[in-house]
Image (tube, rainbow, N blue to C red; front, side, top):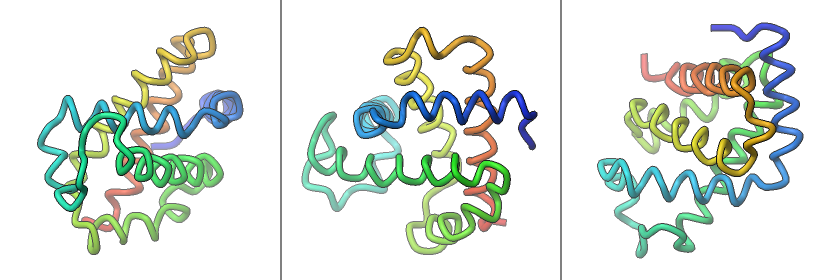
Length: 143
């Protein structure tokens, strides 16, 4: 799944506007995912506090948003650019790739709430397509 030039530009432009708030976006999105999709909590049993807004959630969300930042910077080659992350998630963390779309949905919800004027329907469509491509790239090593 490849992005059109317009979709690519929309994602890069949006990221340029929201990246300064990525820590807050990530913490909110991960907190929502853990609260709404309780099955995702099984990957974080080693955390002392899985509650919304906890320190472990905030710390891990920074790693997630670092991965999104990496994806934006590798937007023209997501499969190659996210290869190491795909390996890590598949063989070390053993995360079910069905969880990636859940987090993507939470990211879209949070971004739309925090940046309503920038998150137009066209940008929403482009960002959703981008996150689907990120999900596919992260799922690559599971095959």
